[in-house]
Image 1 (tube, rainbow, N blue to C red):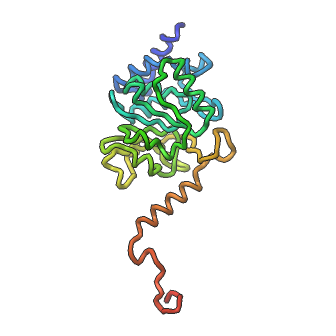
Image 2 (image 1 turned 45 degrees about the horizontal axis):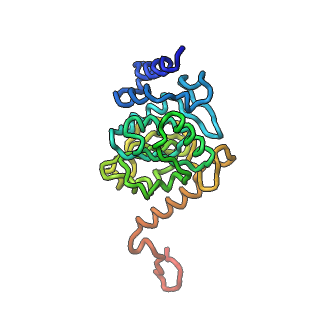
Image 3 (image 1 turned 90 degrees about the vertical axis):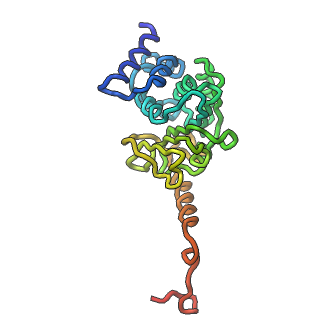
Length: 254
């Protein structure tokens, strides 16, 4: 069976009410256009709706990628940042929607960056920018972004990503340490950063600087604790920032 037929069958199944993860014409057309077999070495897996491990990272199932893309709601001409380049497939679908020169992708693991670049070139999306960066820091030199998609989980949305969002932009990120929720934060909601939950998901956590995909420890505990402490410190004002010497002897009275 021709790969183009398999690709159409895949999208048809994602549009079917039994799954219903593809609902927009833009995502449907883009997923039908991108040759997923250029990103997945095994043609038998390319159009199957399943995830699998590759170079220490999880390649998202097409239904999961579609769910992210529908939540992102990107439009033609939008400037998009993808955190977690992976094999490059999601970035390629976004390139079909917004234009390849408008898609920027980062990954903390160099071998994945090289793999994504190669796959995107083979599929005809050389214009997509892919760089080796700590995803939690975003890509400030290209900000602001109309859309930011994070393909890894964090306890809280990283502040730099929120700050690099356009005022009318949208951030989509899996939030949570144990139980995770796919969360949408619109530019007008950046004050509380709580966002709008769209249901449960299960993603690998964002890696910290120095970690590699497939390493033993895959968490952001150190960074997230530091960020939480910094936020708590900034929220304190006046007397909350200092110890009060009620008795004048350096001790607190009961």
